[in-house]
Length: 311
Image 1 (cartoon, rainbow, N blue to C red):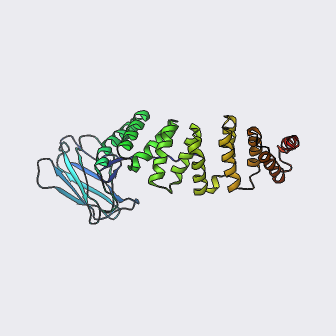
Image 2 (cartoon, rainbow, N blue to C red):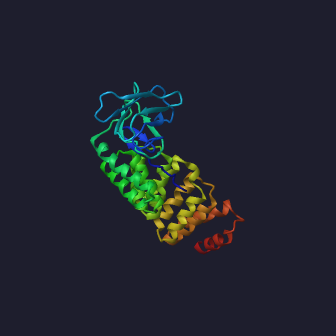
Image 3 (tube, rainbow, N blue to C red):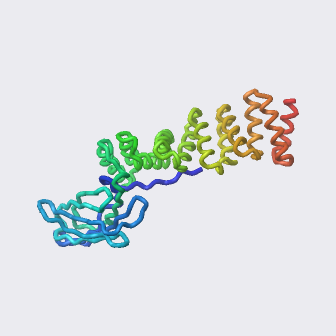
């Protein structure tokens, strides 16, 4: 069960910005800045007014996005600082300040949200610069520093979806399962139907052995995606058994046989677990059911021997 990977992007006042800007420049000379504009679903937006106002100037340079969402705007001086604004009726206005400079950089790709879809709070405004520091650290391949910045941004604004996603993803990558568990639970709060977040919460809680959270998390995952209730979850129950987490192992196995009653291996492991707990009735019922489902299974002789002993 592998959690999905989350790629972080710079965020500027309602926009998701990948990279900074595209330039073909000579130091101090003319520059062409290009990029694209999409909605939150990734669809290109045409006729978005793009303005670039040089510092100290009163008249902005203007361009409009084309049918494919792409735009380009010619500016007279690459060393000037420009305030870029992206305007389209019905969408939130996005603005950012850029100095093109003398290097060739990546396109200015901006996402506009419908005016009623994003409401930036004071907490979000404080969290965004911290989040962007995390993006910079990630681009520098400093995952530990990136994780700390994403975690801080999420603490500042617990409703900051991108910060929670980035925290969960990087924490899983670094095997910081306690942080991943908290972040993914926050993600589930924000997006209750997010299968990746539900799966990450379950897996990270399994790894830290938090039984109080694991079993409800396993049921939530089973309800959201019944296909995961399989031999893989039985294997997780075996791991708990080996750790002497017998109550957790039993609860997980009982969930498996509830959702997938024909999973023979689950009954075998349930029989072994209940026997260790001292619940003879449970052990006998589980072993008998295993033998019904897999009379010629590889563990049939072991199951029959234990069943005879219990009787």
